[in-house]
Structure formats: C-alpha cells, structure tokens
Amino acid sequence: MQLGQSQQIQAILGHAEIRSALPRVQRGIEREALRITKEGRLSVAMHPEQTLGATLTHPLITTDYAEALLEFITPVSRSVQETLAQLRDVHRVTYGAIGSERLWPLSMPCYVNEVSDIRLAQYGNSHIGRMKRVYRQGLTLRYGAVMQTIAGVHYNFSVNDALWPALAAYYGERNTVDFRSAQYFALIRNFKRFAWVIPYFFGASPILCSSFIRHSDVDLNLQPMGNGLVGLPYATSLRMSDLGYTNREQAELGITYNSLDDYVAGLRRAVFTPSKKFASLGVHENDNWRQLSANILQIENEFYAPIRPKQIANSGETPTQALERGGVEYIEVRSLDVNPFSEVGITETQMRFIDLFLLYCLLSESPELDFEGQVATEKQLSTVVLRGREPGLCLTDSSGVRSLVERLAALFEALLPIAQVLDTGEDSNVYQHALAELKPAINDPEQTLSGQLLKHFNNASCAANNPGMVWADQYRDQLLNSAFEYYSEDDFERMRKESLAKKKDIEEGSKGSFEQFIADYFTQAQIKKMRAE
Image (cartoon, rainbow, N blue to C red; front, side, top):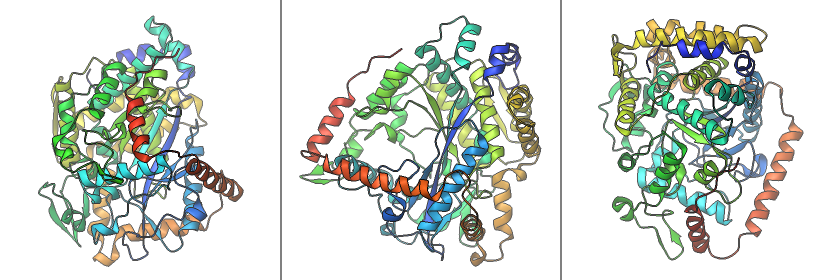
C-alpha cells in the first residue's frame, strides 16, 4: 500500500452504514508522569498511598516501573473533551496529595543524581503485588534502572461495535470475533508501515539531561546542546530510540502481525524461550528473587512495541490468553511522547489526529507484512526518530524513495474525507481543524513538537531557567487552582477507600508460597484458550 492511495477509503465511505458508525470511536488515555522535587530532582518519596489510594487496585491512579513514575488511566469514552476533563481531574487530585512535588512535563527524566534514587514501584505484600515488584526488579537488571524513569502517553482506541457488521457486509464476511481481530491486525500492520508519522509530529524528546547518559551504555553520538543537555539537531523522539526500552534478543523471535494466532504463538514462545544472557543474572535464591524467569521475556508486557492488540483479561488470564479467548477488543498506541505544551501531556488536536490516522490504517488495504518487511518499517521509524526534521529527508519503502514531505502531503489528502465523516458527529469541524492546525508542520519541521521544544530550550538563558521546571510550576498552579470538571472530591475519596480495602483483601487472600504462586502462573500461562463467539 502507498500513502495517498485513497480509492478504497472513498469506496468504503460511500456506504451509509459505515459513515453512520464511523464517528463513534472510543478512546482512553494512559499518561505517565514522573514526580520531582521543587528543585527539579527525582523524588525519592514513596507513593502517597494513604492520600491517593493503593496503586495495586486504584482504577485511575497507579505507578509504572518506578515508585516516582505515576500512571493516570482514563476509562473508555466516546468524547475527547470528556477524556481530557477526566485526565485534568486526576492530575488535580494528585497535585493535592503530593505536597510541594511537581510532575515533570517531559518524557525523558529530569536530573538523575544516583541510580539508588530510582526506587522500584511497590504494590504491597500480596503474591500479585510482589510479582509486579519482582518483574520490575528484573527490568532493572536487564536494562538498567534509569530506564524506569522514562515517561510516555498510551492511546487506547477502538471503533464502535456498530461499525463491524457494516464493514463485514462490505467485505462479504461474517461479523465474527475472528473478522474483527483480523481487521485490527490489518490496522496494526499499516500502523507499523507508517509509525514514523507519530514521532514526526508529536515526538518531544530531541534532547535530554546529560545525567541520563551517565547511566546508559547506549551510544548514539549525542551532541552537547547547552545547559547540561545533550541531543541530536534533527531528532524528534529519543525516547523511541535505543535509549528507551529495547531487547535485542526479541528481534530473533520473528514476531509478526499477520494474524492473531501467529502473534500469540510468537509472544508465548518469547515468554518460554531461555536466554543465556538473562540466565546469567540469576532468578532467585531461596526467597530472594531477582527476576521472574531467565527467559527472553519475563512476562508478555516486556515485549516492547509501538502498538499492541489488547483484550481485557479475566482473572487469572495472561494478555495472550485474553486475546485467544475474546479476540482483539482495542489497540494501544505506545509511541507518544509526553507533550510538554499540555498540562496533561496530550492535546485535543493530537487525539483527533490519532483517531484519523488509526481509521486510515483500518480502512486502507493492508497486505501481510513478513518479518523482513517489518524490520524495514522499524528502520524507517528509527530514521525519523533520530533525523526526522532533517531538510530533504527521504524514506524508502515498496513505493520507492520519496521525500518525507511528499509522503505527509499524500497522507493528509487521504485523511481529509475521513475527517469530514467524523465531523458529522461533532458540533463543528474539529477533525478538519486538527488537520489544518498540523499541516504547516509538513513543510516547516520547526512547527513540530520537537522543533518547538528545541526553540524553548535554546532560548533559555541558563540551566536555572529550565523550561521543564517553568512548565511544571505553571501546570501545578493552574490545576490546583481550578475546579473539578468530571469527577468530584467524593468520587476520589470513594476510589481511595475502595482501593485500600481491595488491596487488603488481596493480601489476606494470598495463600501458600510465592515460589508456588509463580510456578502456577507460568503453568497456567501455557494453556491455550478457546475462542469465544
């Protein structure tokens, strides 16, 4: 498939049932944010469980890999404005609970003094809480503790159920779990082909604090950028480079996205394939656990990818078992940097564009993508991550060598009719406005997030005038001094109490040894689930 070939999309949009169902997309946000001190240092304080709730069981507020790395999760919603209001409220209640601390508004961390300052996330004394902690201990040993401080934004996306029978009729297929999963995997393959589009517009980590490099063994030949910063002159998202989460042994697994069954088999194989490198780290001695296993992946979540197929898991299910049972329910885009120009890390314009882009990937032709072809798409992504704003940059794929500008212009032409359909479900032309707002950045890379960010940091007169700290202070004051919009204080108090009570119940229900719990987990993880209809 080539960018700009919109004939199929136009044909699909010609069907009234599809046009009617298309605007009702659903999304949710997972925003990570690092807690920092008012001096701009990584917080070493424990998560304020008693005032915010238990990270193991709270529906909206948890931690990611580090104790200081908060993660905010919004529920599924059809309204972009509703999702942003929910996200602002979660930030408001969090600011009220962390005292003088701030939330770092960038993906790459603030000043990291000692690795010992990076504390592993804690989830209590239950077996499942301890498993989550040991998993993170394994990540620390495998990839280094500094990785635990990188933040991102995940975008969870699904189409409305009403779209599936209309699409199935168009393709002459039955509306089954397998059909829906196949369409989502087609979306994923196209996303892989054009994943570079996201860091081009929304990459916001072209530079980082030099203290990060002291704790990393990855050499990207980063250049001094002034005021204690390093980076690359045309980079867009160093978070998405080898400085971020990588597992070179995963490349040997050949995991592809041509079908749900192939994907699940590949992921399960990774969880049960021994790694000599990781075996040398040791797993556990008596009750002293270093990692969950010595395999290429400890658990499936360790598979790093810019996009994932997802299904909500039942109790006791692994992610792949949930996919086997119920097929793909939604997809998770994981390639977004935290947007420093937003108080919640993402904007309405970004969300509208991602909706359009994902629907383009869903509605376009999507031939199978073998592993060699997939590697080629990853090289394209890496090129834009490291050199995306370089004048005259060209990318090569099956359509030949074409400039990035030409490819983006063709993409926007193909996105316009989708935007027009989505705007029929809105009060104004918000999707078309999103395209119009982003379009100037096609020919002027300095209008991308990475270009704007570099301009702000270049204009900072000294390290003490760090724009990151300016934004951190501004957003804290802005949200602390504004009213709740979607939730109420009573809502958050109820969630806090319920999360603490649920955590206590889980701890009291943890029976037997932790070693047996882990053994049982991996025994169950090998069981293939039957597909439900």
